[in-house]
Amino acid sequence: MPSAIELIAIDIDGTLLPSDSVDISERNRRALEQAAEAGVEIAIATGRRHRYAAPILERAGLPGGMTVITSNGSVTRTLAGERIDRFTLPIDAARGLCAPLRRFGGATVFTFDHEGPGELVVESIEQLHERIQLWVKANQESLREVKPLERAFDAGEAPIQGMICGAGVAMREAEVWLSGSEFIDQIEVQRTEYPERDLTILDMLPPGCSKGAALARLAEARGLQAGHVMAIGDNWNDEKMLEWAGHPVVMANGAPDLVDLARERRWRIAPTNDENGVAQVIEQVIAEREGALARR
Image 1 (tube, rainbow, N blue to C red):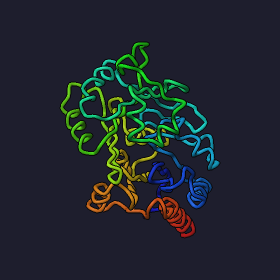
Image 2 (image 1 turned 180 degrees about the horizontal axis):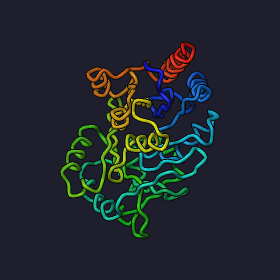
Image 3 (image 1 turned 135 degrees about the horizontal axis):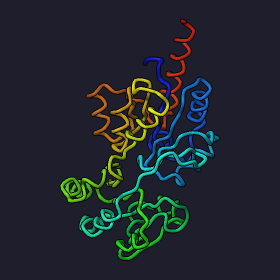
Image 4 (image 1 turned 90 degrees about the vertical axis):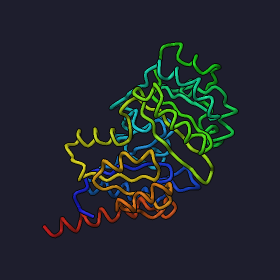
């Protein structure tokens, strides 16, 4: 692995976090700290919204100036909350998606960029709870029911993200429908899969938004080319940042089809999230960086 890596973008769930914990492991935390000490910038790139991601990072003692790409690339802020970028879905498209998505039997959620009740709007919390119970419990203070869901946009506020989650087969059908729908030019669709739970999440983002696009903007702001950037992820919503980065890394515990793709493309496959795979990769980056400096 070359020593030219100056920026590493890291996913949270299934990547930085262990499977059975809501906190970053000590080894991963220390590796992030060592990267910063070595002059390598760490950025977070997650499907979570900022308020749902920040406590994890804050508990690990990460710096407030760290860049955090959230909602799969729709919003970028510093960990302390300073806004860098924000994009929104067209209101007419968000409203128009509500009715046709009901036929797929999943639970649809829209996210708005403000704190408190109504940050997350859903037609039925009960229906959502059946699919993602832990997420509902963690976000209950932000959830609000609106029936019908189309009324969520009556105040004229545009959402930063839409999401439908449900069984894998049904969500694949929804994805096919979305790709051929009248709305496809107004949205970007990102898929996250959990086959062991028969759960698939489709995120409907503002056009052109993805973790990859947000990472490219961050790198440009730093004056870095893709060859100086590493991306580490585990699921299909990471695909675009993995494709953009010069050093893509997929977790061994990732979505099986994505791991297969990584092998085909000769991307690096890291040890699993439960083996501190992120730390192992960063430790090697630092070691090679220090070795290159010593040879000068």
